Length: 378
Image (cartoon, rainbow, N blue to C red; front, side):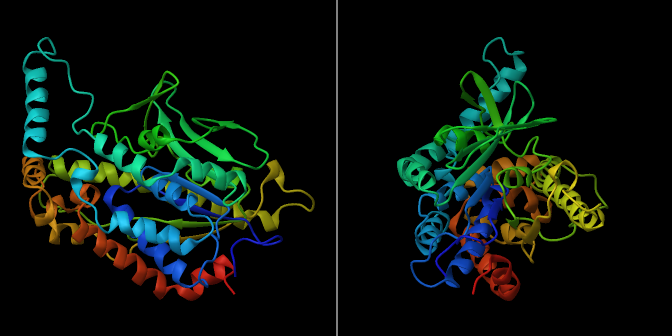
């Protein structure tokens, strides 16, 4: 099989955000690529990504003629990650950031203004410019391989979730309550905006509007794929099924609360949207004969997510992160198991990301029959 063919369902790949946890998505994709004959095309005509998932989607779009090459490119970056490639975490950098915050607080902003963010993620911009060939991405979309890429960010002016879409198909912009989709030519600013986690990373200005992480107001993360004509949606999440209970004996500290916020930010909207879509799918067969109301249609979904909790892996690999970052996390209360959730999103270090890649390969292979059937893999 050589990718999408005429008459086959349009399959969208949806990659939610997840910080360092998004390495798991790379492992799942690597396993899927291994099931195809060599030099097979990317099987997803629609790619939708948010935050770190948007970066993964953009890399896939630059290697559309070979899914193996696309996943190899992702593995090279994620398998060799260092925190310093994402944000400045040297001792001097962390000290300057902390002192600036303290001085701004003590002087009420008179001596120094409050910093735009706690961390400087300019190294990530340099990494994206080096590793994502946007000219090749534009050519791929223009030729329909894939035909659509959507990157989501949050407008800090309107409070809307904005899907920036580059597509070679006829496109109708959409506008719903608190969300809209617009056509554009994607570049590194869109990716940096999509990953700009509030407080941690600075917002990104585009055309006079500041944007932050796409997950902030993304209550319907499947919407872009549906607007772009998906018949089936494969979602690769970053959180295990169910909820991991926190320590009920002690009040949550700052690290635990921040970890909980990131967990909710990246995954709660997805779970709610999946429930809504499943209800619609269940109701459609019972509708009156003729066209479905409001143009609704049946859209199949399949979710792949970690069987093991990435927070446990993060705790095991805490020693691989820079000492300055460990010190900051300790100040916030990230000690022992109480810091695992927060660390799991910030631990951009190869020992941890490689373990998540391996977990993604393992989980996908365990569900090979199900996933391959969903993709129509002969």
